[in-house]
Amino acid sequence: MLGNLGRSLTDAMKKMAGMAVIDKKAVKEIVKDIQRALIQGDVNIKLVFELSKKIEDRALNEKPDKGVTASKHVITIVYEEMVNLVGKEAHPLEITGKPYKIMFLGLQGSGKTTTIGKLARYLQKKGFNPAIVSTDTWRPAAYEQLKQLTEELHISLYGDPENKDAVDLAKKGLEKFKNQKIIIFDTAGRHKDEQDLFDEMKELSSVVNPNEAILVIDGTIGQQAHDQAKAFAKTTDVGSIIVTKLDGSAKGGGALSTVAEIGAPIKFIGTGEKIDNFEVFDPSRFISRLLGMGDIQTLIEKAEEAVDEDVAEETMKHMMSGKFTIKDMENQFQMMGKMGPMKQIMNMIPGLGGKLPKEASKMTEDKINQYKIIISSMKEEEKLNPKIIKHSRIHRIAKGSGRKPEEVKDLLKYYKGTKKAMKGLGKRGLGGGQMGRLMGQFMK
Ligand SMILES: Nc1nc2c(ncn2[C@@H]2O[C@H](COP(=O)(O)OP(=O)(O)OP(=O)(O)O)[C@@H](O)[C@H]2O)c(=O)[nH]1
Image (cartoon, rainbow, N blue to C red; front, side):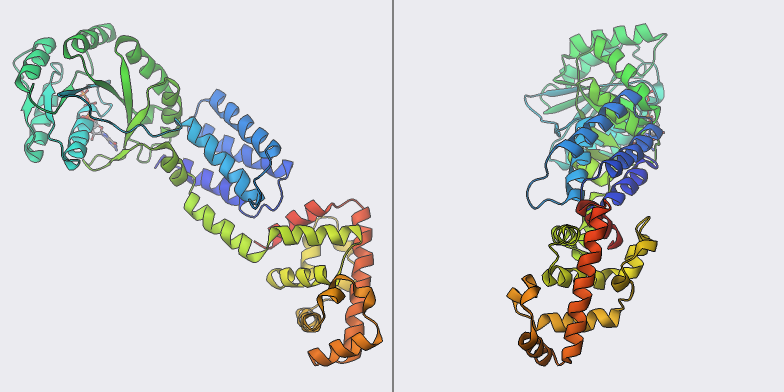
């Protein structure tokens, strides 16, 4: 649906899945991607900029709730602002009063007649039995189209191809179906000129006195939908909108967003030529599908599985500040197990490859595993305060882990070396937050 828009937006959202801390540059990049996707989808430029400003402001200034990761925080903001863009809440069609009169409006070719069939079918499925009145005296085929459709659906139709007076047809239809629960009026989509068409709509509207006037707009016209909707709204009290042809239309996003601006809610969308290609429009469900939220949720979960971002950040902070303990090192080893050796990780960090601490570069997976076993035999107090690990403790740990005391000493040497080297890196200005984020990215 909506051509490539969904895919481009989903791609932009996916980039966020591994974000461990909110980083200005990363947020700006994502906002740029979203802008590009929306502009290509013919969304009005002013709306695009308003939206991107809101996303950026909120992402950078609002504090995420406790336990909410950076990626989830930003993704939720993008999602919420996109929902606002297309109308916030769902406005389901409510049938109140009898007969409930629905008058369809829309330019020829917008898909009006097809959509009447779709709505009738939808209402039938809900247990209603709507009747249809055809007042389109300009396109005789419209009556034929409705006749065929209503016969298939076993729905009552009133129309008279010989009668060229739309208002008279409406009056007769009203009389004929006055005991019906729902009456749907089809109207012309073209006239001698546009003004005549609008005059006729006005007159029909005063005769029918509809409970709801539904405007049908062709989604493929993109943001031009705004002016069209406004022109109709001037003559008739447009109560709701149906945007059609959203299947594959590259400009559908533009139509949906500008139409939402005129105030009448979009209640349904057309997603194909078949009678069942018709959906209730619910902004939040629509946007979550468009952004591929299901996929993104899975991606976030995967990233979170690979690394507990809080632990990663805390460990990094300790590493940089010199407070690095064996407990932090244990966390680091656990993360590294999922990311590959330290050397590889450090090489990926721009500008750090050459300045790799000697101890870190020598680490191999076997060595990490050996260290992990030794650490598992340490007491919590030893991990948090390695200074207390002296002669007798070294022997106890070695025994408990089935290793030689030299190997425990080797680990302690590695720990001290890393602590010193990391403190040096911290002084060179790579913040713990940045490191945490980098770790998050490498662990995707
Ligand atoms: N792909 C696609 N085509 C649609 C959709 N809705 C309508 N159409 C097609 O659009 C064309 C015009 O639809 P109609 O219902 O005949 O047009 P109309 O707006 O009723 O025209 P008038 O009766 O003259 O006002 C037809 O070929 C429909 O099949 C949709 O959601 N998707």
